[in-house]
Image (tube, rainbow, N blue to C red; front, side, top):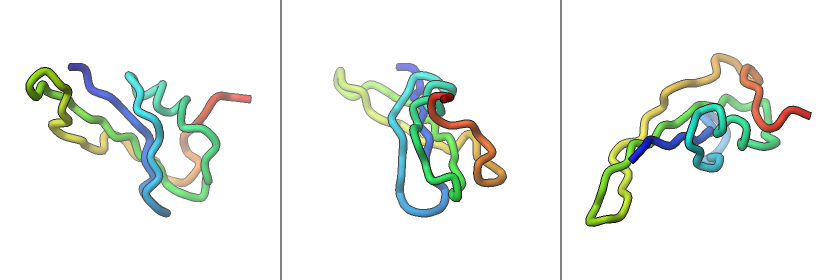
Length: 76
């Protein structure tokens, strides 16, 4: 199974975005966020567990170096 991605808050709570097929789609789907916080990009790798998907590992693959560095959500 292919990996999935989502944007997560690195500061200020346990906010996490919707799961997406690519890093670009995860950033587009992040929506309107508090840009005072730092965000990172999580990748989840999946395996098979008796015919059902099971998360094998989740790692942080990218992170903002300063708040507001990434363009998140759909451009206006």
